[in-house]
Image 1 (cartoon, rainbow, N blue to C red):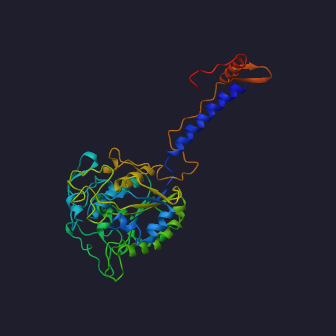
Image 2 (cartoon, rainbow, N blue to C red):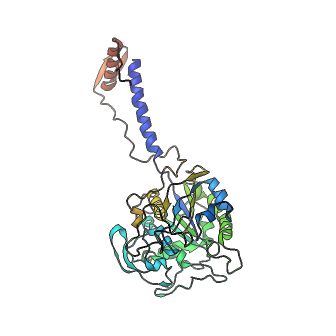
Image 3 (cartoon, rainbow, N blue to C red):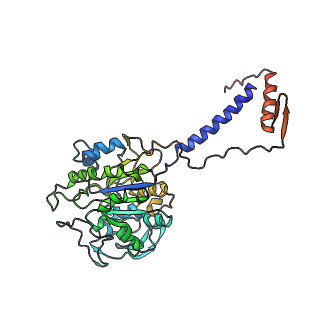
Length: 412
């Protein structure tokens, strides 16, 4: 009997180990992703000793995980923002930040989900993660500082007058990826969801008003782009750090964050001198060199904070903006858009989510064995009828008890 019970215990232990292994590789139940995008800093300046952004480099990294090998995908700014939400690779005009707000033409979608052509505003056939979330009944928001009015962008085929900051208006359309897609700007969703930053606190008040995905972009002073700023603020990492100190606690203290939140803080690109890339980044069909003088947008680093991430970790796994998009899509069960679907591209997994909830189960988890048929039973003295499988195990145990078991000379 003891041998039979031991055999059953081994089976039970193996079952438990299989379930535990499935849990370990599972994605946590993230419900709200917040992405803050800063501007134009090399990794060493942002995270190295003597960083002018100590809240970013020290405080936030102690609260979450530091991705030390996170990269932009191109130069200049706009191609990075476009990639984050659509997986579209750079073209010559997005690399130049679309000084003239033109349609992307001809715009036929080719291999790897890439629109073929040149231009700024992608045709309706080119989807974004915002479109994906809407189609699935989930929500998205873009929060842009100094935006003024929702869904603000130049008229088609006109000059983008937001390229240079002005006193009282430091909004940059090229840092607002959602206004570069006809699927968004031709829809009422743009005015409803692409809104000024000052609306964020009200939306954070409840989980129901907190979007599934929130993309938060400071203005040209507070994202670190300008230094000094037109209004005499210092700009650069000093002003970016102050922005984080003001807004990150609001996010981390919100109901939406506490209900399965993930905060990502990163930069669009490194300085133009760093054109390195990672992750097998391919150039796409519309520009041979995403970094203009090299293969990528340089090493920028990132910090991730979440209840599902153990604090104080550092992760050297290479990631880029396409990886971020792929990770967001995986968390919400969406298909991979454009370059986010590249073969071999790694998304955030258990190397990032190092503090998974005990209840997280993502398949395939083996089903428990079916209940035995009630009609197939064996009589056992001193007990009621038992299923055939258990009765057979008891008979085997009895047989084993009556003879010597010789171990194999090969060991266990």
